[in-house]
Image (tube, rainbow, N blue to C red; front, top):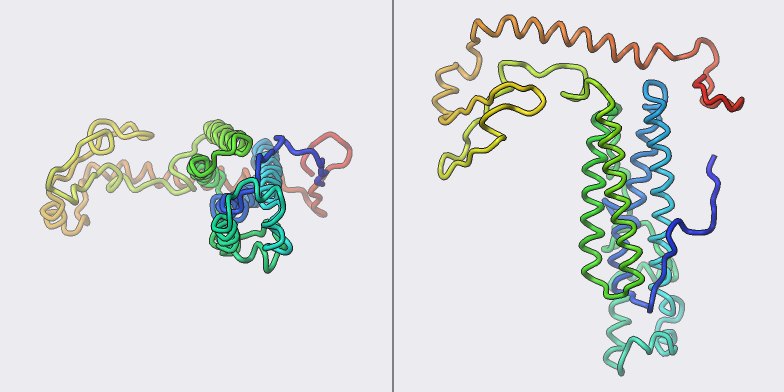
Length: 315
């Protein structure tokens, strides 16, 4: 149950109209890395998390709801940036508030041109924000990443928050309005906060690597293939200890020779038999554990999503 409070989470303000920047800001309203995409991503991910991870369900719903509030902030800012532009455009361009940001006929024609860069502002919405990006391309559900494995979803969210943070950072370079910059700074900072929330949540799930149930085949886990021999670089991604596993990287300096010598990686070191057996055992154990996480709390008979007693227990 959503309850709408009309006061914004952050007091969005605008010094003067700026249709050019209003159009750019649509990226965070209906774009791939925008607030609606984030809200819907976390909202859909929450369903699968409710039974096995009720605490993560609560977190995802809270952050999704905050993203909807950020969508409102972005939409309100866009609307204020278009003040005096919607309706009869040429008449609006003659109004005093618009004329304060222009100087002469050329500037007037320029501001009209900027508003018409995305004509949907005028022809379809009368000057209000629509669920499109800055090019007028409609919002699409394919922006959403919800894979049904919470560790995968949380890693997707880390990437989503990172991209959104960067878009806000880029947008701040295209406006000199101090009030708008304050709003963008707030929204950018909340992306960083959400990143840390998702990272902390991921760290509470053990095991969380590799994603899913099946373990990586130990025969092919440690090799780094040097596919570009000229001026090859070395670093912690191909030498020393691997992250997560604690194993040593195996640097394949000559991939062609290695593939030929191993019959296309099909010859097996006898020392791998024990590791393969251990991997298969882990696959079965983890599969059973994951299955029990999802099925054990499920009630018999009629299913009920909410508990209205106030206890908060999952029915």
